[in-house]
Amino acid sequence: MITLRSKREISLMQKPGAVVWEAHQAAAKLVEPGVSTMELENAVDAVFKKYDAIPLFKGVPGKIPFPAVTCISVNEEVVHGIPGSRVLKEGDIVSLDTGCKIKGWCGDAAVTHAVGAISEQAQRLLEITQGALQTAIDLMETKQRWSEVAIEMQRHVEESGFSVVTAFVGHGIGRELHEDPQVPNYFKESFLKDGDFQLRPGLVVAVEPMANIGKPEVKVTADHWTQVTCDGSLSAHFEHTLALTANGVEVLTGQPQKS
Ligand code: MG
Image (cartoon, rainbow, N blue to C red; front, side, top):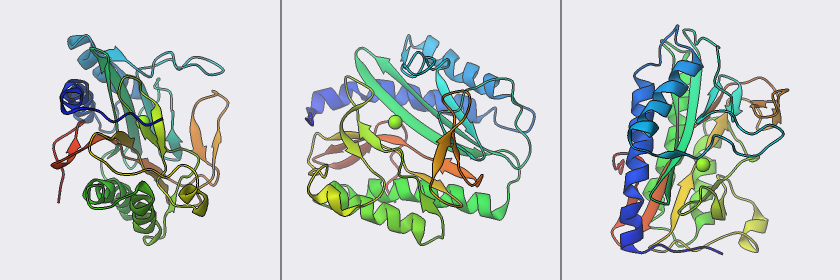
């Protein structure tokens, strides 16, 4: 069941959104060759502590509970990478995904960064994946149903020759990190019967396209969490928590990015 949020509830979601974004900015400043993924994790954690924000990823159940406040995924790692002693090097790309809860409301965002100078193709992957998210931000207020947005996000990625990861989708967000509806970044016919939803004021969703340079398939590694591309190709991930209001789309986890 999809819960539409009042204006007041959306205003309460601005705080966790802003704190998630501040945490991302703190980590982004450290991204350069020689930094470890644990240093990025610690930067995010410090911002959450400053605001008494509850980290939402740490302890998420799995074969082992997720051990960190941030998922940090490097190069062919798609999502759910575990921060540790790995040191980033020039030419890597690194995705950070994190979320927190403040006063009972959640925020969630992901960004992929270049580490120093990266290949032209990697740069293009970052631009296209971020562009898929921007496509959603631009279209959500003009389209009637999510499927009309998802098909354009998919087109944006596939026209570039890259592929959309279909194993993971975005989600409703509010009192909980993951609420209804599921928010796919691609279109399939069956959504029209089951899973498509109306775009109405009060809808709050975390939209999070992931794209690969190669094929879309992913697999989990031996740590039980890290998802990697099956073909070893680079993968990128961008996410914002977005509220659809009577005045358009509000980006709760960052500065408004309407183009
Ligand atoms: Mg998410």
